[in-house]
Image (cartoon, rainbow, N blue to C red; front, top):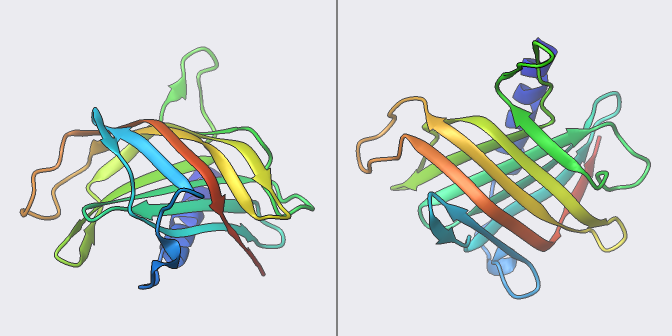
Amino acid sequence: MKKILSLGFIFLTILFTGCSSDNDDNAVDNENSVSAVINGADWKPTKINSVTLIKVPGMNQRFDINIQDDSKMLMLACENATTAEDAMPLKEYNFYEEIDEEDKKLQVSDALFINSYLIDGNTYTEHIPVSGKITITAMDPNKKTVSGTFSFKAVKGGVLQTKIVTPEVFEVKNGVFTNLSYTVYKQ
């Protein structure tokens, strides 16, 4: 139950902080970059909607990245115990949807991945994550920049629109983010 509540909070946080502005300040450029391979095709977002570290007293801190191009939006999130610095620990964060066969217990997730489709001004999320990892390799709390890698796999949970046909499996490999500027929100 704690896992579901925690992931639910991450999802709500992503939705809350995922709103984008209409200016070009969030455009991807040579200073900050993101790339990945989605279902075998190279992908680069055209816009960074938000990169945030959220610190709430008494709760784990959350780190979110929300990026998009004209047709897709990816939301990556991870959580960890709150630290004194305005940064996440440099480590791998994982999303598990399965029981560990060796230990016979449910894996505890500390990451969440959501992919959505942007169609006619609406956002549709038809896939459910089954596995994934985000690794933070560098995070500078003074400059507020972060770098790392990510990958995840999601399966179709249903059809919410009929304008495009979405794949049964949505797989992201070789995801890399470099020198993304982040904002810290404290409550």
